Amino acid sequence: MSVTAPSEDSRLPSPQAALDTRDTDLLRRIGAAGWFVAALVSWAATRLADPDPSDHTGLLICGGVDLAIAVALFLGRRFPRWLVKGLVIYAAVVMTSVVIAFAKPLGPVPLYYIFAAFTSAYFGSRADVVAVCLLVSVTFAIAMTFNDSVQIPGVNFWTTVSVVTLVAVFTRRITERAEALVEELDRAARTDPLTGLPNRRRLQEELPDRIERARRSRLPLSLVIFDLDHFKRLNDRYGHDAGDEALRAFARLLRAESRQGDLVARMGGEEFIAVLQGAGAASARRFAERIGELLREREIADGISVTTSAGVATFDRDATDAESLLIAADRALYAAKTAGRDRVIAAGDPSVRPLSVR
Image (cartoon, rainbow, N blue to C red; front, side, top):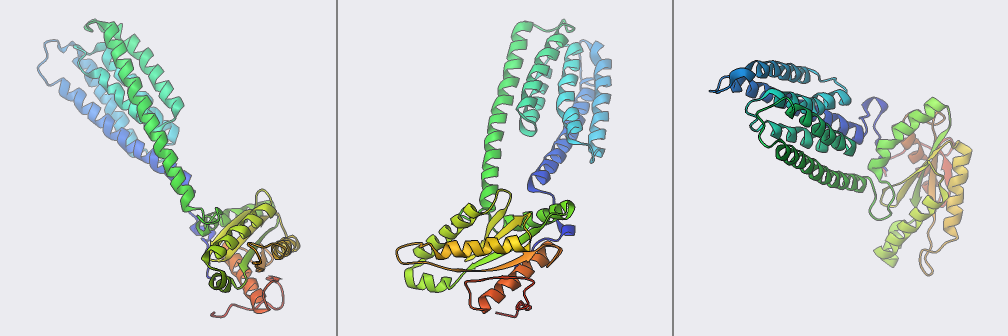
């Protein structure tokens, strides 16, 4: 078996953390572009023919604020997520309401609320959607009391608030469905489809973190690598359906006998691994021997039974990082198979030798 695990220095952030970072950066860039466009529109509005230029000074002031926020977002690559959301989503609602307060005629300005509705629903949470809808309702109502050019203010208010709410709700629903699909695909990418156990990819992602946790807590951690004996012979004699059932049965056994907090995974083929948190060498060996005994007592089908070989390695005694710990357990497994199979050997056993080419 050839196993490589990421070293601590090369570990990447968790998928969710990386996704949050990308989303925040995308929101920041979208916000910067949006504020720049808002500043440009404010400036352009003062250059067009206007029968009532009394609002031009206010528009230019708002355009200056828009430009300042755009520059801040463009340069704020290290801004925390809450600040980016505040500047892009909530500030957009407030500034739109400020413009509404003196824009004459009102024109399409209330449509700017849709930008905040969309970004809050896509990048935020349900709470953000509710907060934005409430903020739009309150600030829009207040802004219209200062603008005497609004015709039929009641109809204008309810139409705007209804459209903003519908955009936010429907966008949030679509976003949640997309997020659920992404989570499902992510789980599928880290799960073995035959046994339902975590796969090699999941193990390689989690093992360095578990080792680091063991190092900080000074609690033991051990690996046990299992290999079903003569699996090819079983497939050839009884068929692949029997082989698949043997793999599923062994996965069920490992899952039933492991403790909460342990990680049991299928490495591929007939190889499985158990990461035993808080288990020293002796405990891990007893676990592997118990699995072997229980497996010998069972039949996966009428008259069909299998056995397993296992290699045990313990963190800090046999290795100090993920990759070398996996190699140590693999060497012990190879020694168990070489010694006749259906047995458990630990990495510290004198019979364990460096792996040769198989």
